[in-house]
Structure formats: C-alpha cells, structure tokens
Image (cartoon, rainbow, N blue to C red):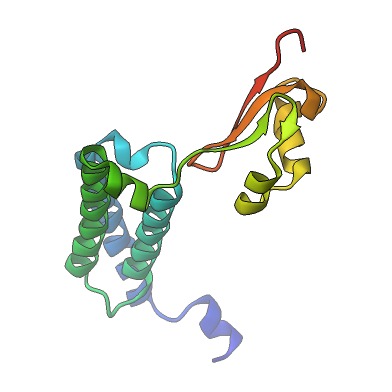
Length: 162
C-alpha cells in the first residue's frame, strides 16, 4: 500500500462511513437513552468494560465493511442489555453484586496507612497522600480516612481541626 492509499482510497468508503456512522451513532444514543441514567453513571470496573466494548463496537460498525449496520446495532443493544441485566441482578442479589462489583477499601484510618490494603489494591502511599492533599490536608496525619471506592476514586475525610 502506498502513502496515497493511506490518505484516500475511494468515495465509497467515505460515504459508507458517514451514512452508517450517523445511523449507528443515532442508534447508540437511542439505546443509551432507553437504558436509563445508570448506564451513564460514574463508572465502576464493570461499567468501564461495557463502555470500552461499546466504543469498540461502534468503531467496528464505522470502519469494517464486513459488519452490517443491523448486526452492529444488535451488538450495541446486547451490550447495553447485558449491562442493564447485571445492574438489575446486582440490586436484587447481594451475592451477585459482590461477584461483579468491587467493594470499597479503607486505605488510611485515623492518620495511619493500612499497608495490607494499599498492597492488595496496588496503591502507593504517595497516591494516597496526593488524594489527601487534593482535599486540603498536608499528609497522612491529617486524614481521618481514605477509602478507595469501587469506581477507583478516593474519598478522603480529614481529622477535625486539620
């Protein structure tokens, strides 16, 4: 393939991408609106995987002529439906929820690092202190708690008077 083919091959591909891309994007927006706010909520690990899969599927619809629009829309719908089903089951079964979602982890308690938790979550002391500083503390001694939430964010509570 020469460099000119990398820039432009033919109008058929461009027109297909515009036409199929517009329809696929519209279908994805409709599917996400139907599925509700939970699909677009703050991401935990499972939701992130679904979001990446949605993007990958949309990309395949746009760029691979071997993927028909209807097949792609069905794939997008399936991913959102599975995410909805997992969320539905998680609300109704604590065991199921525990299997698919991570639990928050206490990283700092009363100004002391919880080293076993830091190690198991692969969080450095510096990362925890950075979260403390972002909330106005100066160091670990200022923190009442630091919790690694299931979505990967860190919640910080400062000790009174700090």
